[in-house]
Length: 101
Length: 168
Image (cartoon, rainbow over all chains, first blue to last red; front, side):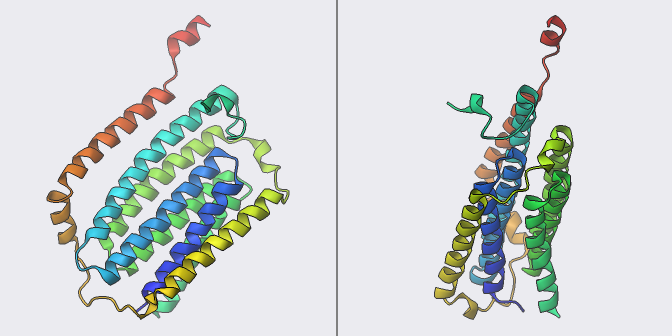
């Protein structure tokens, strides 16, 4: 049986990769990839702590809600990406000045 | 045996994430992201959460990854392949990511979390059903509204205004 620490290390590494992607990448699609990786890292933490430290299925329930919210968020962001591509012919976020306030 | 399986899944999850961000061709990146989702779902199986794992496979790999793949194919451009030079920003990103990982792992180690033993009976999905239908029932209804609103918003955003195109 693996210890809680193993799962937390995987989650921390995935989180670090997501942070790296958010800092470095300027392509909107790559940034979406990074955000999805971050959400997955958080979900692993929820399920792992639920399995080892909590008797009820509270963490798993919260992860179900988190996954559904991530799907809704992905739908909206991808629609924005398609619109930005149609207007600017590129999806480099440093070029998308018109989306700023 | 279990350690071999765990290590393989860790490689799939982390390697898929790295491919997603660093593959030159962004279509391969989208496929790598789906692989990373699959590795995380398998980790959920190891954590005795089969319901969450199957939900992850259905929603993430079945819906989100396919949606991302189609968007990537819609907006992909050849000139994205060129920018492969190592930049100062990339170094800063690697340093920040490394610092984040080290800080998180040190914090978890300081809490002596490897001494925790799992409870003998894992929470089953009956508990999930009970929680969703009692405590989380209002949240479920709000979630339904959020999903409907996001789909409506996505359709409104991406809609091509045909009449204007005819005029122009």
